[in-house]
Length: 253
Ligand code: PEP
Image (cartoon, rainbow, N blue to C red; front, side, top):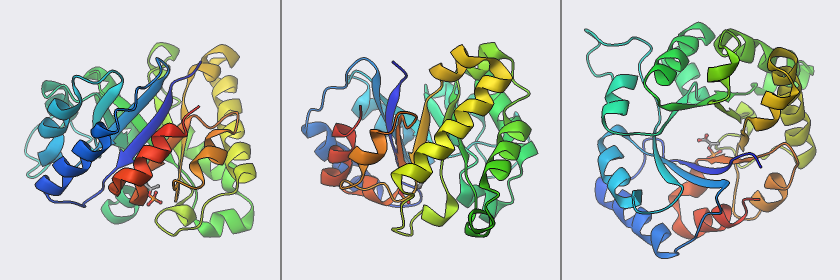
């Protein structure tokens, strides 16, 4: 079975101590992941080591960065490289979150560079794609997402493509409380998988986890994750409350 992943994206929230307490409360629930199930905490950079040490005893719990720079190293004050993440044994990195694209001008081409660097340094990218509301309303969301995949991922050979996690996050659903319907999510996930199959063959396409993100909550995770092509979620707001995130972890297939 494909990896089923509950990924928390804390964004720029919580103090260090609040973050520690949240992790403690989640870990206290002692949820055992099945071998194909993973929990990932994407935390602010200063919390990476603390989070790693909190989860390192737990099977299939991992730490992620929320971003890395698109250049290998050098005079980029304030930035963090994929190699630095590797040196901290950080397992995952979110690449191309819509907030990074919108507020920090990240382009598909820059994201391709980030993907390459993450893979070079054994950090698994969680590649975010998804359309804004105007594109959804014009009915061209498939073409929009296909271009994101082509321009940031499809240069990869199959050997490295298999290590990517994709998160479909319709921008109109992020932080808005408006979730895609299960039908909308499944349709897009199946479309993404069909594009992966076209590029890399059906076998590889079946191995890649595609997460849904956009107002995943404790009360809708179950139905979203039950969709055949939805392999878990990337969760913002609801990952900041232990009880909510615990229920989302429990909703994994
Ligand atoms: C996200 O941060 O990727 C996200 C989907 O946020 P939210 O769950 O709050 O919509």
